[in-house]
Image (cartoon, rainbow, N blue to C red; front, side, top):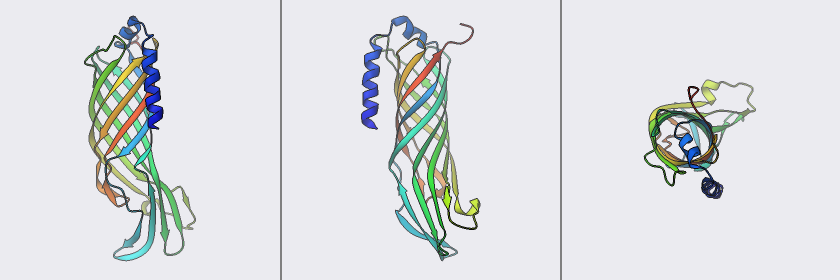
Length: 228
């Protein structure tokens, strides 16, 4: 994944050398919409690989986890241009951290995934323009995080989502940096690194610290406001 991101960045820098200055000026007036894909890097805790499930100090089953510290991350976003230097951005991201298997004493088995969803609202500031083509930025904002351990497969004759599934929620902040590279009047590339501190109030798969770093590359559609 890291090799793909580096290769994409290198291609973007090559393409940027062919972008005319007026196209880069148009970028500083354009709204944005697009998608990013990359890596979710865990900076928080990791759940145990296995353990015993207890209710009122009575063992009711066991669990096994296959949670990855690194996973593929996808994000869709919209950026609204306020001025040449400022933009506000809304984004929705999702990562599948891995699987969790629950085994109950009656022989039933539930298998599902642990997913993290983050809904972000942030301000992006473009302080400088490098060579009239490369636009670095810094980013700061808030995010609403949803952690969910769902069940996709079960062999139990009785299933209750209130019992077998878990959810956790957190309002937090985020900070990031990156570069934008317009490669055509209406097409741009985006490279972003972002820090997300995530400590849930309730434990999810036995832990509450899900701090993360995301490293992504994206493609965006650039469009001018209708009054221009």
